[in-house]
Amino acid sequence: MTPSPPPPDSGLEIDGPALLQKWSARGAHHVLTPLPRGEFWRDQEGTARFAALPGTKYALALSASDVRPPAFASLWPGIELRVTCAARLGAVLAPGIDAWTADRPFVAGDVAAFDGEGADHRVVESDGMSLRLAPHAGAVCVMVRPILTMMVRDWSLGLLEWEGRHPWRLLLEEV
Image (cartoon, rainbow, N blue to C red; front, top):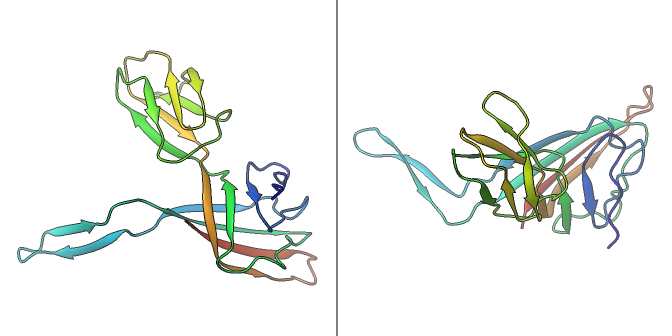
């Protein structure tokens, strides 16, 4: 499948039958959420507990309202897409930890790292699954744009006739 080019001013890319064309996703709202993989409960003393299942997955909700609608005609629930998120996931590396390996691929050329004061920190190497930082004495936060294989859960498309805009929403869950 041919990836749709990122809409103007967005890092969002979708490979698959969905097409976000120019003027369809400006100002898109991206919400990345962990999917519940377990159950919360309270013991007899009232202490909160969590019985976790193995594995972590994400849900992604995308929405926008722009002058052109996205091409969702062949996009049905259950179809798999590869999504390069514009939203970033972060990890904090403790002092002296200069390497990090991600749970899922990320955009190798778009990694941000900064220290506790907010100053940029140098990323020495990044290959899309792991990265190496310049040595650091304090904690460093690493921010990456994940690349996720997702399944369409639901979508909607509308028309605000008088405004000439097409509001849309796309709900995805990681495979």
